[in-house]
Length: 238
Image 1 (cartoon, rainbow, N blue to C red):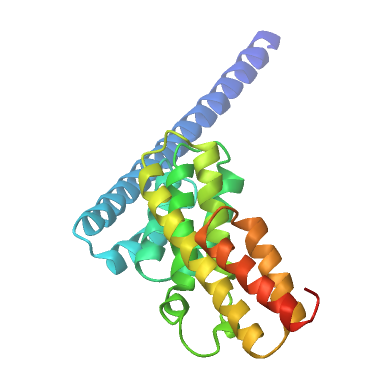
Image 2: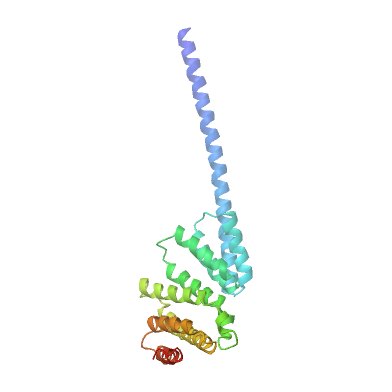
C-alpha cells in the first residue's frame, strides 16, 4: 500500500512537470514566433525607408524612420535610424529638431562612429537658422541681426576639427568656417559703423576691441583699428 502511494505521488509529480515543460515550450515558441515577426516587420520598414532615402524622398523616409523609432525604439537598427533622422530633419528644414536629436544621440551613444557626421549636420542646421539673415547682412538695421547660431556653428566646426582631424568632412568644414568667420567679421564691422554714425562712441570702442581680439591679423581687424582711432579723435582723447 505504501509503495502504491509513493508510486502514485511520483507519477503525479511527473505529470505536473511534463505539463509545465509543455506549457513553457508552447510559450517560448509563441514568444519566439512573435519576435521573428517583429524583426521581419522592422527590417521591411527599415529597408523601405532606406529605399526612399536613396531616392531622395526625404519626407517619406523621415516618416517611416519615425514610425520604426516610435513603435520599436530598441532594435538593432536604432542607432542608424537616429543618424538618418538627423539628416532627414535637416533636409526637411526641421533645424531645431536636428539640434535636439543630436543632444539626445550624444547622451545615448557618446562614442558613436557617427559623431563627426551628425555634428557636421548639426552645424549646417545652425547655419541654416541664420541663413536668411546673412543674406541681408548689408541691409538696414544691421544691428538687429543676431549671429547666435552662426557663432554656434563656428564653435561646432572648430570642435569637429579638433576632435576628429581625420574626418572626411574636414575639407568642407574648413571652407565653410572661413566663409562664416568672414561674414561674422563683416557683420561686426557694420555694427561698429552703425554705432559710429549714431555717435555711440563707447559702443564703437567696445566692439572694435572684441573684433581685434577675436580676429587678429585680418583686414577687418585693421579696419577696426582705423575706426577706433577716428572714434578716439571724436571723443577728443587723441
